[in-house]
Image (cartoon, rainbow, N blue to C red; front, side, top):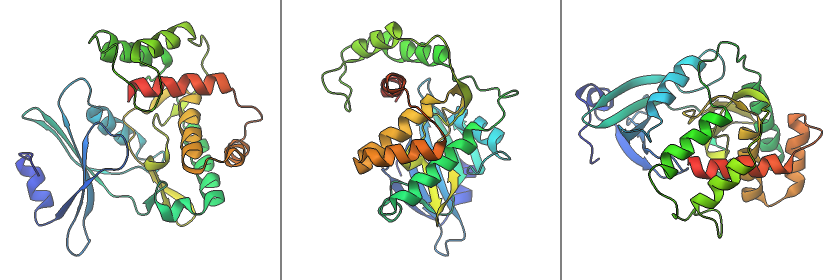
Length: 261
């Protein structure tokens, strides 16, 4: 590992096997850590200590969510020498992107719908994390517009650049939001399945009060990308409990996510 890890962290993971995890779209370097007897299993995230990092936010949100939904426990956090370090427990199971999970689509669709309903049912009255649209658009502006990253290509969107998408978001901004507690990045890699049930949720650095379509747009995109089957999308919508899905809103929040990632 290229990092000069804090002494306390090195003591915790001393003698463990460290493997780089390349799944997902995390802005951090992620490592799976386990000892020979597999009595200790962790995930370590390392990110530069700058405005683009979500690790401080993730640490705070993990602490707030501990008694609300199953999320990893924090074993270590520190900012040192220009980097942020977050060490969390490994949740038992496999992420929903794994082949073993994806080969059971109906089970998975039911599980992710049930899981999202549980997240959206969290009481937001005393929630300190504001992820409403105005804040997300300000984040996009700070990341891209103020830093003049106007012509950078977006890998997953053909024939679009950042300025085009930002203008689209401003011109089509929704005045009213259906506010719930949102995961913020609710897609297959961040949902852990054990058996036929969700055993936990990871990568909650963007969690907080927001429109439910923040999560609906991402999980529906995950289903479409991995299965290319609209009947499974319909099944998810039914299991989640919606009579109608707003396709314009889905498109809007999908594009918003592209600029935040």
